[in-house]
Each structure stands twice: as C-alpha cells, then as structure tokens.
Image 1 (tube, one colour):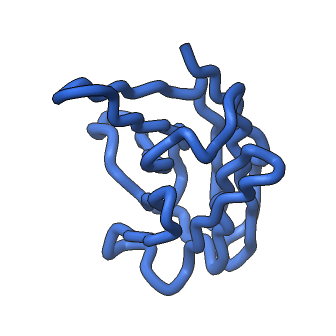
Image 2 (image 1 turned 180 degrees about the vertical axis):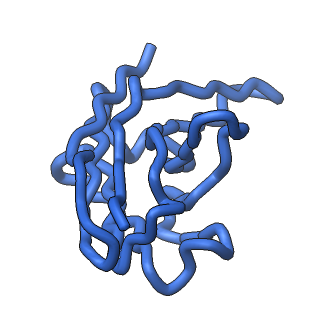
Length: 120
C-alpha cells in the first residue's frame, strides 16, 4: 500500500503561481510514473502531467509552457509548479502513483486531493 499526501493548494489570482507537492510513503524510485490529475466541478477527472522514474515528462496541451512537473528522489516527492494560472485551472488536484508489478499487474494509488482556486 502506498500513501500519497498532497499539499500546496490554495487561492491565487489569475497570473499567479502555486507549487503543489505530493509526498509518498515509499521510496519514489519504486514508482514507475507519478502523475497529477485535476477535476473541476461537473467535469471528469483529467490528466495534467506525468513524470516517469527516468524523468520523462508529458503535459496536457492546456498546461504546456505553464506547468512543470518534477520529482525529488531524496525527499520522495513529486511536485507541480504552476505558473500563469488561469481561472479555468480551478479544480481539485490529485496526485497519482502508478506502479508496474510482476507480469501484467499494475497498481494505482491516489492522494486525497488539494483544492486550487484561481480568481479572475
């Protein structure tokens, strides 16, 4: 079992910045992919950014050039730096850990979510 705890959400004006962190209960080196998702009211959960154990990153088109995902292996954290925030970035942000097990086994773990609100 992997526990994930997000922090860093809050209220910010449009154009501002926030940094989200996700602390894992195990060595982050054991996690194949760390990801950030978000869910706005009345909308499905969407993928925001991913980072693999090798450091490869991927972003949703809506956040490219504004958000940066990183991982700190020493601190067992994954981080999401969000710049130039827009009101449409308002959502609950969730951290996800994806682990490839033996054979075809795959495991997903989720944090409790952290609210990000961007005012216009």
